[in-house]
Length: 201
Image (cartoon, rainbow, N blue to C red; front, side, top):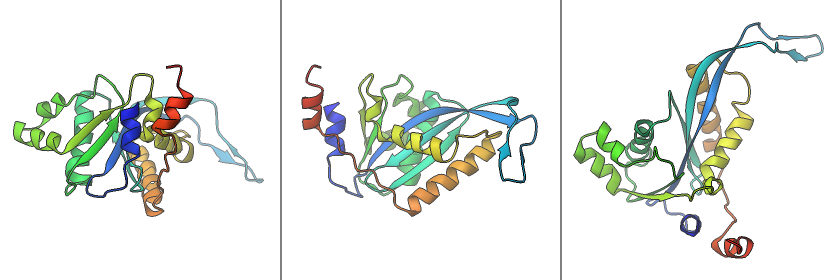
């Protein structure tokens, strides 16, 4: 826990960004009957719906940079995670000297997966530029990307979404708007706070 909190206490450095990653499944649901609006502006949605499968939302958030991106994947395995890590290193921060990557302590988060997807040279080049920091077990609340996923759910994807393409459109509009507003995260919980409030641990 203190390792993660120490990372959040670092001053902002665009050449050494701190980036948080978290993922969340989202069920795709389509309407069986078209919703309608009455003369008073009230929308009526039928309770019946059709399941259209699931997708996984990967939230990539840079708290101090006010930047985030959401990648929509078909599933959540070590290979999808490796694709996201490569995207961060090669597309989002290609010129960064060093990237600190905060993510949950899950079995799917394996650096070896990069070697399954890419050549050894490319996989090693990605790994050498990243400092991996995992949140402790039962401590996923320390991952700022989890907070961003909560905001995304409330603001953009809390209704019925029927397809992957529709999901991509909604999440893209959401993060582009937040990036335009440079919505940063001001993390307040410090190591000193933790030692006081969690003294029993």
